[in-house]
Amino acid sequence: MNGAPDTSFTFTVNGESRTARCAPLARLLDVLREDLRLTGSKEGCGEGECGACTVLVDGVAVNSCLVPVCQVDGAAVATVEGPGLEAVREAFLAEGGAQCGICTPGMIVMTKAWMDECERAGRAPTAEGARKALAGNLCRCTGYGKIIASAVAAARGESR
Image (cartoon, rainbow, N blue to C red; front, top):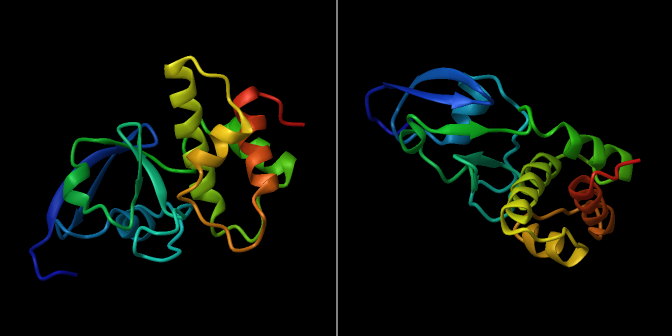
């Protein structure tokens, strides 16, 4: 991909140790989708502007299209397919927060990051908090109302 020789990188993905043999500067998004066959994270823009490829690296939300795989060697990566996101995925289904599906994985992962932050800070989840947390994730299908409702329902454990 970038002319560098392939190297082995081992990291935990969704609780399972995985090894990828690739160029050090290969994008994490490509390694997840192509090498590890975890296709939930989507490429929307490839420039870190839309959030469709959001994953958690050691609990921090990142745009996987901007992260070289060498930076996650030894780290814990969580994707939309991973455990611990069931309630968020269910809330997005129940509340109608998913439209075409391109932005949905990033919205779900970012919602989980926001929920974790609310819990750490002892803050109650609010619609305003969800709007701020999801501001970096773009959706071209909707006015965000159902996405925000989905995030709040997930955080409050209220999915229908």
